[in-house]
Image (spheres, rainbow, N blue to C red):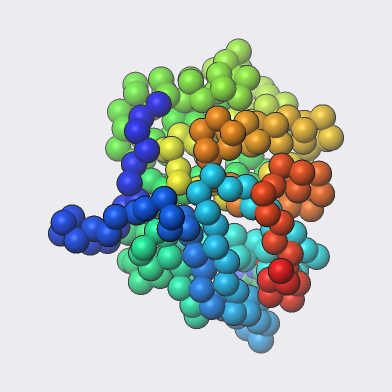
Length: 242
Ligand code: ADP
């Protein structure tokens, strides 16, 4: 495994780069609001995520969970409030800088694997590393290691159509990890799986936190996911209840 990369900061003079200490939360959302039309989807949301934590976000459909995850994951921008990684408010970053930041620091797992159908498992896993500038050879080598860690070495040259749903989702977990992200955001990662496959994904997530200290923020309706969580955040009507 490569060394963990420092958070990419939009500061040209690196001597002014703030040091990230272990005490700082990995991520803070402060006073985040989001409105779609007349609908206040997020209202004054404040949240901290610490390193090595598994945080789950639960609540009824329409509560704003996915919107919160997308804003925290820099896929959407808030209307109000701040998103702070380490010491740095990333809310003002340009789209291009934000894409780079996301590629280096953030992994995603969605309900449906969203693998590219024309590529093999190892190519799918390697792609975000190649986008980040790694050579094809090095990226594929790293992808092979990750596929081994999720028990898929024997499937690495298969395309998504040649794999089961559970295998595709395990490939998606490996893809989320390829750039050694600071944090992985998962939106209903077990939502499309049967209970045996759900357990596999949960065991993999718990193992990654235990063995690598990987941080996860997981939106889920799967109550058993809370068993592997350090904290369960409850949302309703765009607000965090606890
Ligand atoms: P949850 O994940 O808790 O089910 P969401 O964050 O998906 O909630 O959605 C919260 C509310 O925001 C819902 O009422 C949804 O219809 C609305 N919403 C989400 N995204 C958009 C969008 N892009 N445009 C308009 N309304 C949206």
